[in-house]
Amino acid sequence: MNDAMRKTVIAGNWKMNKTPSETVSFLRELIPGVKDASCDVVVCVPFVCLQNAVEVTKGTNVKVGAQNLHFEPKGAYTGEVSAEMLRDLGVEYVIIGHSERRQYFAETDETVNQKVLAALAAGLKVILCVGERKEQRLQGVTNELVSLQTKIALQGVSVEQLCNVIIAYEPVWAIGTGLTATAEQADETNGAVRKAVADLYGTDAAERVTVQYGGSMNAGNADELLAKYNVDGGLIGGASLKVPDFTSIVRSASK
Ligand code: PGA
Image (tube, rainbow, N blue to C red; front, top):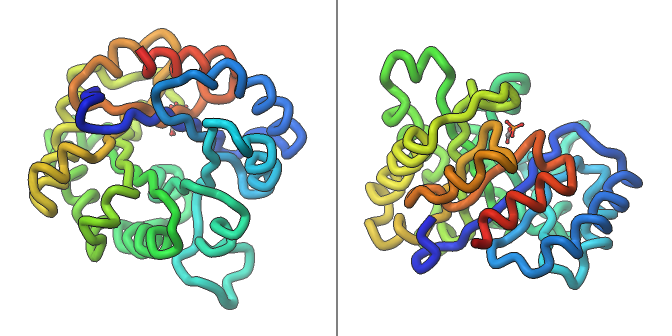
């Protein structure tokens, strides 16, 4: 990480875990342990837990995010949630383009782009996910792939809006598998993401963008990953579901 240039952000992605009442008890336990963090701390919870999470974290340094949204502002989209609805609830962040959304819910680079634009227009901060599958890494196309994913997702995003975008590099083969990219792989690919941002907005803007790593980051490997120049935080799945583990990662990022 490069603290002088950019913000370090540790975000938990709870996926489809925890009920609204479990959310309240988890956050009450988490808040005292992370209150002195020098990094930003975000928890991205299921839609039905958002209201409780916003209430419990009010006045603390823990921010709340959603895990998806629909790109239309309103209308006949049964089961969907708009950016404006999230903003009205007091939600600050939203994860967009997670590989599970791409894989199981047919999201494409184009719909990811539409969602990014809708979120930013509503005043949300975006955690944009990019990453390669195992066979793509073996084919040697990782850097080109994450670069393209980044560039398509950011089509139409102004340089002013870019300060509300975090990019999370998440190798699909490392998500929930216990396999982590080496710190060198994470640094290199995060660097490719940053280069893509530089191609679009120039080097200064790219140096200011927070690029997280995600994929089996945990209390044991966070120090090494976060020490890398291009790794400005983490998007944490499994290890964000336990207060001690998540707190430990936040402490690693605050060193
Ligand atoms: P994981 O998930 O930490 O459980 O690998 C990360 C993510 O999917 O964001």
